[in-house]
Length: 202
Image 1 (cartoon, one colour):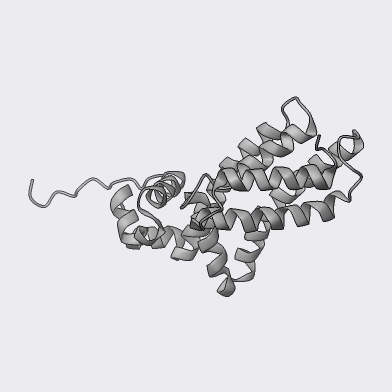
Image 2 (cartoon, helix red, strand yellow):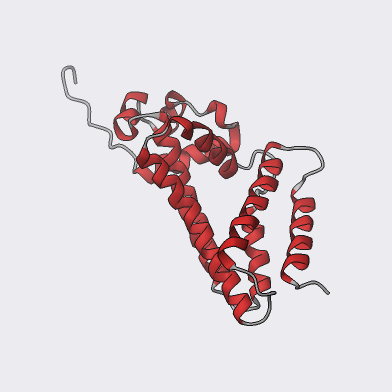
């Protein structure tokens, strides 16, 4: 009927937008993730998306936080299951290392950290919170392994800092597809390092 008001389309939940963003990164790469393209995917205008997220930087950070929330839940399940501390440490490493070249979570992580050079204090605090969660879980697991006598006596906090730096370096190589550093090779290197440094080999 002419002149009748069109029914207003409800905006999708924020989580649906963030899930769609991650799906687009996985299928098409980060370079294809524009506000306009994401808007078409979820049935919103780019202006509407900007109203909710204020900037692409904020959208990317929220998508990373959403993805990290899912990884954090999986990490919690892995680290509380029965078994030796070493077996759970291997599971932690397995979850940490990217699935392969252009892993969407690591692609997003790299982009957010690259943009963080110009980020404000709040964004930096939120990024630090992401890193802190991984660090605290690793420290607790190492402390448990040491207390049980499974691991060589190490300072859990210092060891966790060094191990995560090693994992980050390897993970970046896997995520960007550096030749000779595929996921299987990286996991082998890390397990060998753990055997040597924690006294768990043989």
